[in-house]
Length: 394
Image (cartoon, helix red, strand yellow):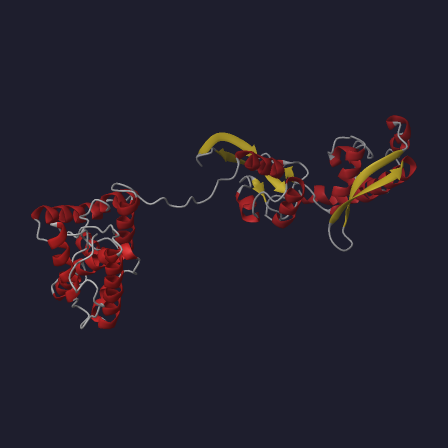
């Protein structure tokens, strides 16, 4: 913009009061006399400041002052600043000096044209209907889309009062209108990616693994399955007794699959028919160390892991208490065990075993076939009385 030929354009900027800058008006008249038109300047701070004495002190006056400050990088004024002459005076002095310096260099500052708040029946009717509609809407996205269509001259406080929305919603909607336009809603952050379906299936299969759970032998221990929507189906499934607690199961799963999910999510994915240890009515299988280690021995020679069937092979057909306790001379001997080296044609056998000396760990043991036969005989002699107690308790 061309500078003024009058003396006021080069005179230092002095403000006698926070709401009075006479040089501003002189610059406007001088520029108009040279160019024949008003320069692209914001409205006079005098007129803006004078409006603060009216009923719009907390609304339109602050909005217009901020439109005057924004193009030159001065922080926005707040409604509470209108009662602080020192704050407004400082902002007006700095803004006028910036505009005067820009004018002397022939620069151009883009400033929005202030739309003075005037009484408008259409606007009042629009805000009235928006207030009614706002109370009816439930979706936040629709609320923000509607708020972006409010009159542009309304401040955050004015929109908050007129429509009944929160001050934060008014602020966000005005920012959306300036950056994107009307009928937009905020881009809320995603709550996070969901767990992969493959991982969910791996967790369920881990719970159902026979190494981690035992199927109940009682036919009455059956429950209805649920579909993916959480509704019951007509299909029944046997309850399973988990052999470990949650912490141990999660540690075992993490060792084989890695840290793919938290322990809380791991517990949430447990099938409802898998019962934790200690629940009453689920003592159909023994989960003691002796039974588990004997199952490991059967696993090493590729035999069925039905402990009862193996034990009954070393008892009389009509087994009595003495048969289980080892007092019966008619029970089959360990001749089948002595044939292990011929049946399996191996020199060494590797099997797993629970070690509970300091903490529960599974270790691998490799023995010669002769040592393995002695170990197997020892376990059979120990597990027969234990199996009798289990059958008595069922």
